[in-house]
Length: 156
Image (cartoon, rainbow, N blue to C red):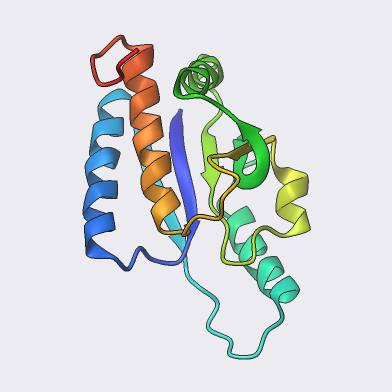
C-alpha cells in the first residue's frame, strides 16, 4: 500500500518545492508516498469544460480500480487534524488499496473524476493556490502519521 498525491502541473516555486520534498521524505518514514504530476495542457484557446475533461482523463489514467480516491474539493468534508489522522488510520488498515489524493487544475475536476472518487475532502472553504495546497496536504499527512504513531509533532 502507498499514498499518492496526483497534481496538475509542476510546483514552480522553489521554496514550496523544498518544503513539499521535506514533508514527502518525512511521510516516507511511515508509508510509501509519492507525488505524481501530470503536465498542464498547452492549448491556447480551450474552454474550461474541455480543459477539465482532458486533465481528468490524464488523472484517471494514473488511478487503478482498487484505489481509494479522495478529491481535494472546496465542497468536500472538513476534518480536524485528529479526525483526518483517524481517517488515514482507518483507510490504511486494509493495506490492499492505495490512497490517492487528487488536486485538480485551475478549473477543478471533470465529471468523470467526480464519478470515480470515493470521497471529497476540503482543507478550506477558501480558494487556495493549487501549488500551495500540495504543501498543506503533505504537512497534514505527515501530521496524521505522527498522531497515529504517538510522535510529538502534533500538540494536543
